[in-house]
Length: 395
Ligand SMILES: *Cc1c(COP(=O)(O)O)cnc(C)c1O
Image 1 (spheres, helix red, strand yellow):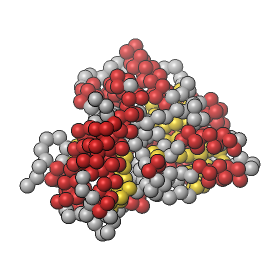
Image 2 (cartoon, helix red, strand yellow):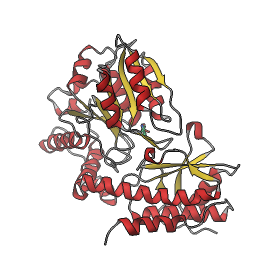
Image 3 (cartoon, helix red, strand yellow):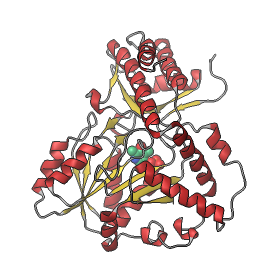
């Protein structure tokens, strides 16, 4: 028997739960892609994306997932043979670097490890060693969705500036934009990229990047440019060119609605909501960890992301059993451990369209699963989450 019925709940880090309003916004005919309405939709979204990235620079929208937006960034600012420095904190920056290598860049990985964020002192030291400025770009993620690490993008930006090194600072905000502070200009970021299907609550299929003047200068000399990704192609006046072809009309309707919803809540409130709900998850995980089987992947509390929590499972208990139980018996889909953590971890996403019942429900189901499967755990994880929210969400 099961206790699942109705809508399955996705607690995976993308695609995330889409609000009904966003789904409904797509339920209409397409627009004439040359119409005034279409031009206004586009211009409004480009303005709003730059506002959410917190830049005076220009944004671009691609019909692509995050991998596409990665390629957009690389191809627009790099030339074959350019040396780039990839900062490891899990899987995603490494994969971005792999794309760069396949495109002809000379990739150096600054070794990190899966249990912690990027160490800023190590980046500073590597840049100071690079006296003749061979390194053309630095690649890093704000949140690594595999490890659950959150990198301090502001402090990294300051450290890069302090070395006087001119490398471009390229930041992946796929698993963080709209969920936690991101200040492209203030933090010295040259190109930021993201996607639609995580914090932005929109179907997969849109990739974004935002660029500053330094990136535009590099773009002029870049020889990895190809027509679809090319910023200069997209700067041409005609609306059709802005998308490198036919506009993804329905995804734009969805994104428009999602951004309107974020604005209605207020970006600052959305950040606070994510912080509060993430801490509720951490209180529960911390309580469960008393059973000596489950624990946080990220060792330092300050380096744990407010959008996804990666939970290790040891003593030969299998995360897949818990995931199967939660999905098949209770209708909650947890994220799976990926990369180095395959078979060793599960992930709880708390990004985008999430609220207290979704998070408490997810935590409750996990606790039911831990009990049903006889996986040792500290009792009262959900109670700890409730205690946290009860004292931090004032009446
Ligand atoms: C999901 C994700 C990506 C890749 O996005 P896709 O849409 O799956 O291509 C890149 N970076 C981070 C940090 C992500 O979480």
